[in-house]
Length: 252
Image (cartoon, rainbow, N blue to C red; front, side):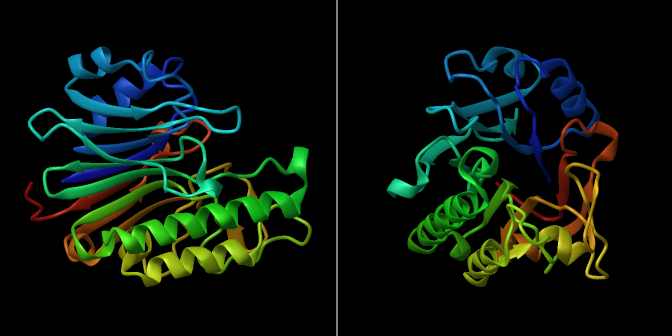
């Protein structure tokens, strides 16, 4: 089974590119972020014609962009379970969780927090509060105790990267991501590349100590045990490059 996650920055504007990518890579289940379109206007039929079922959670405020999940024809259609963590700090279309057969699959887009408008501290506070809500939701719903995958843009500098002083990133959200993983989730890219290969996929600019890796695929142990490979698809990058994970022996 092939899992992929991609930040598309408007599915309508980039639909031809997305369809070419789907045809080339043939992922089985896909998480999309920044769809930037209402559910009514989501290109459901075009994706269906290309061999993919879909479920979308369109933007509901000016500060988010919406998320979606695709499943390849032949697999069960995505059955929506959760549209966002149930807490006030998690407003907006930033989490869509579906069941695809036995697999619980989530598309995640954690807030950046708009530091230009609100300042770095407010941006960090917003992101940390949202990640706390996500962690509480994942714990309460037992994601780690079943075959689960959380995929998308977590907006956290992982792997202990040192945020630049005065930036809109901090160790606080790194710690919150670590607490989320402590529930029983595994960073599948890092498991595939324990040697420290950066796996950068966003921005393509050098930061202090390395490049950014904001987009992650987190899997429960059931999924991590089936990991074959994980890679960043630089051939199909726009603002960000897709992250692809290949799993062996997964049945739905």
